[in-house]
Image (cartoon, rainbow, N blue to C red):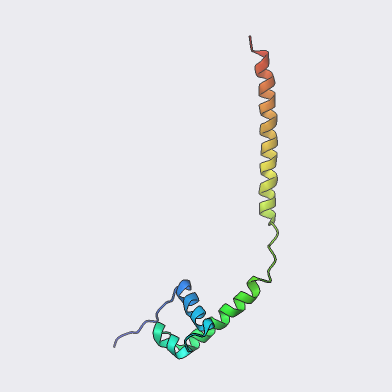
Length: 98
């Protein structure tokens, strides 16, 4: 007995197939035979793609996370510390100039 394995499609392949279905230039049956994918699967991918397109434009840019804010604060503290040390070293080096 031979085992048949299901073909795994990459995200880019799914997108290409879903876009073909959304365009409507070919029927679902034609797309199904072209890519060797079941028509139900094409319909599902098409529905998912349309839903994703609807939500991608409605999202507002997410505010910076707490981790990002913490990192920025730490970096500003480090910049301040290094600037202070640099100024202090400049003053001390002037004392040793001939």
